[in-house]
Structures are given as C-alpha cells and as structure tokens.
Image (cartoon, rainbow, N blue to C red):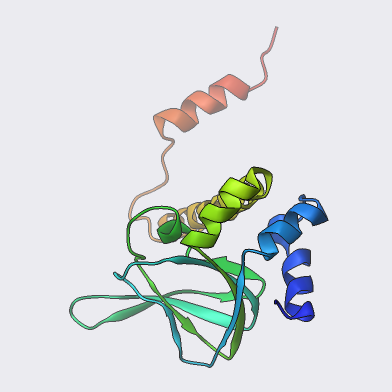
Length: 177
C-alpha cells in the first residue's frame, strides 16, 4: 500500500493533470513506493533499466560518465519529476546516471506491472504513455532552447538566415497591394 501522502503527491502532480482521478488511481495502484538516501545510484548509465520512476520528494542529479573517467553534470530534477522515460520504453540502457542529490521518495513502475496495467486498464496505460510523451516533449523543447542559446552565444560568424528561415519570413511578411 502506498503512503497516503505519497499517493496524494502523485495524484496531484502535473504529469497527469488532465487525467480523471479514477484513471490516476489505477496507475497509482501499479506503482511501488521506495525511499533512498543522498548519494544512492538510482539509475545506472549503460545498465538495463526495468522501471519508470516518479520522484515525489527530493532531487536527483543526472550525470554522464565518460570512458576516460570524466563526469559531466546534465541537470538536476526536483520533485515532482519523472525519470527513466527513454530507457523504460525501449530496450536500450540509459545514457546517464541518476543519483539522489538528497534523500528521495519515489514511486516506481516496473515492466510486469506496466504490462498488467496495459491488459487490465488500457485507458490508464494510454494516459500514462501520453503523460510520458508530454514530459519528453517538454524536455526536447528545453534542449532546443538550450542548444539555440549555446549556438547564438558561441557563433564565430555573423548570423545568417537559413534557407528555411528566409522562406518563413517571405511566407509571413505582409503583402502590399
């Protein structure tokens, strides 16, 4: 049984904001509650991942380790957040480590429970999948913004309009009679 505080935090989190409470409850019933202390490796780069994790308290650091021993900080996620999305839905190991930055409280969905949810409540499984697609889309938008900012700040030559930008500007410019 999930702690009532953990349950309410999950049910009120933004990732399922548009989902009815009964459907959220079905997803919640498939989750396993865990806690971990600061410094705990929660997801290992290059190792198989069998769960999707909803962080309901605390924060985690995402970092990438390189073969030469160098580590690169990617970002920090603050609760409420979800991680393990890309490696849960495809058979590839994660490309980052996820480490508890402080003590954390989590709800996790494992593959057998996900499969059971898909069979017993397709509406709930679809709502979960859509929520994860939205989460990934938000992260892609953030990556796009960060990349654009980086390119703009580190440009060696004056800005030029790309062929696409030039086409867009011609398409939307005001026409004079």
